Length: 160
Image 1 (spheres, helix red, strand yellow):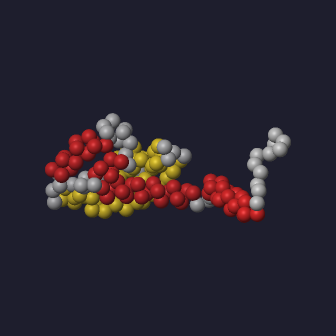
Image 2 (cartoon, rainbow, N blue to C red):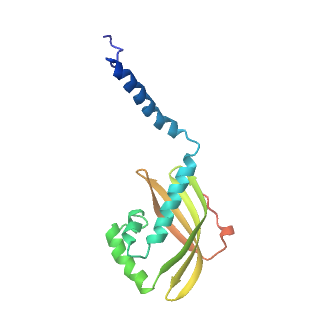
Image 3 (spheres, one colour):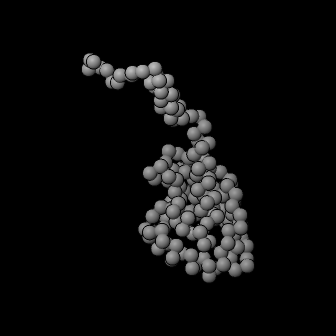
């Protein structure tokens, strides 16, 4: 063997194995340049927002904590944040009745999602606009900030 030989294939079955391996290794390379990647990213981001909306203020609030940053939780660990926030929400009788995503914008490792929501507290209901700012940390999209507005969504700037 010379210095350039990387491996030696022996036997007839190895050639088929090599071809299969080569095909399998080329699939991730194709996915990197997939034009549907933004669609997939949008789906993941929107699912994160919907999971947060579904679990925030419920007995599943630990799931909401798991998809938020320490910045969102004011530096508190998830369990401490849940213990601090959940009793306040229960006292208000907070319930999320509806969340509809209106728009999603992505720029590298940052995303902004604008949603129309309906909540109830102590028997009263209110419609509100929610602006979620997410960041990608270690490959996961996490809610970093949430701004709640009663303004018309048309006037909201969603520049990243």
